[in-house]
Image (cartoon, rainbow, N blue to C red; front, side):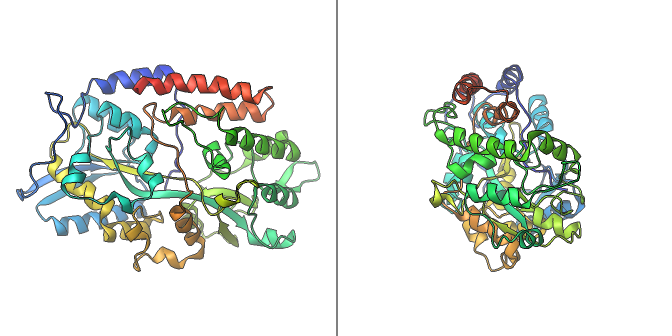
Amino acid sequence: MRTPLRRARVSIPALLCAAALLAGCGTGGTDASGSAPKARTGADDTTPVTITFWHAFTDDREVDAVAKVLDKFHAKYPYITVNAVKGQTDDKINQAVRGGTAPDVAASFNAGNVGGWCSSGGMQDLGPDIAADKVDLSVIPKAVQDYTAFKGKRCTMPWLADTFGLYYNKKLFAAAGIAEPPKTMSELADDAKKLTAYNGDGSIRVAGFMPYMGGYEMVTEHLVTAWGGQWLTADGKSNTSQDPAFAAALTWQKKLVDTMGADKLKAFKTAMAPEQSAQNAFEAGNLAMMVDGEWRTAFIKGDQSAVDYGTAPIPAADDHPELYGSGYVGGNVIGIPKGSKHPDAAWKLVKFLSTDTDALVTLANDVGNVPTTLPALDSPQLTLTSDPHFKTFLDVYKNPHTSTTPAAADGGAYVTNFEPFAEKWQDGGVPDLKAGLAELDKQNDAALSLGS
């Protein structure tokens, strides 16, 4: 079963430890003289070889889908056999790199680690290979390019994407007299109040929306895109106190929390079934609207949920109508770890999985994720385009305003550290929002400086 893209909270001491351990690995794609890395030398070598590929998929359906695509790779390169190992986490990848037992190719669900991998050399620089093979990166949307590289070094490639939008219950909308999904944040708040139903004791029976942070995919990175928030400045500093989008997003969020009742929302959130279970609150009809990734469409089918639903872009801030249709994007990344024993064959696999249109379309169709290149998105073989629920996410992915959280050497701690702050804010524990954001920026800048 697909795990949503969530980052664990990261402390500064933990970052110092991780940075030191990875630094001991060397610089990945740089030779002993310190010169720039060179492209692989075995482009024409057809000596039979077996390479190891670690990925994080665990669900049988998804593991089988990966195997199908690897069969296509072997058909193209019959001299390369791929030993695929499922269920491999980023911690296991890092431990293997440090211990000198790294796989030849590794894929991750967490793009937040790209900055650390690129800056430490935990993943090798793919730039020379991309240049030598004339790989056209313009077929990858800019937001996706941003989270797969760091400070000019591309140590990973994107391997399918996750795009976020709004799911809404059509039956509950009709009962409340709401004709269409909200397009602005004020409409979202109004609809949430209309759609919320209470029990006799005043507790929430059906939540129109879950504005309480931590309720499924209700996290700041998905919310702030409605205001066009930019997490980092041009010089890589934390930007949350300087960009008015963050204060505006949190102010909107807390106002809705207060209106619906913080204690009531907290109790409702606690009672919600696990996000990835068939009893998911939206699938069960207890949550009228929610922000979620494109994978939910496959889960609804697989869970045989009877929910009558629609999908739409996340509403835009009232003063930013140009942002409607865009959203947040993240996704899987794939690269060649430091210590790969067969880097030539490893690059062939990375290139194939991340740029071959047929490979991307086949995997996207089977696992229900968004393919990461424009040719794959436009392929007539992409059956997902015929599903109106899924098409929303394809359109959001293509939107030029769609954004992401850029790669940073702190492993994305500047984002994960925001979550406890937002939780404290919604519970009334931050009396001065601007001052609180300024203090948070200081803490994040300390983490961000570790890799500078």
